[in-house]
Image (cartoon, rainbow, N blue to C red; front, side, top):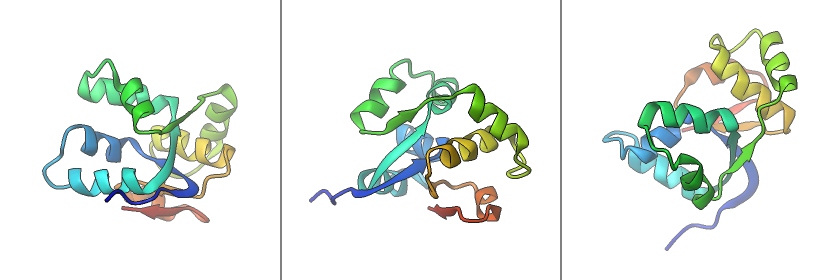
Amino acid sequence: MRQKKSSERIYIDVNVLYYYLTAHEEFGERSKDLIERYALATSALTIWLLYVLTKLENVATILEELEIEILPLTSEIFERARMLKKPKDFEDRIHLATMLEHGIEIILSNDKDFDEIPKIRRIF
């Protein structure tokens, strides 16, 4: 029986989607369970990154079928990311800036760099 999705919107990082799409040996099932459990959103950047990693040209359609909301990548988000000190990687700062812009405080991610961010809770 499929679990009911939480009504709270949660951000999903690229790595969780990659594990799911590639049926990753270690993290694929965990990722599938998380995707089924939560109401999810991610940046438009994620679509591009997943294409680069998987070469799946239908990645946007897959995310739509998974009912993952695609949040816009705007110049304001880029500027906000540029001003952030953490996480170290700019790509992660874009994800964090997107979360902050949309009032999302929880991220599904295997990236422990998000653990250092005040008021952000990482699930994995």
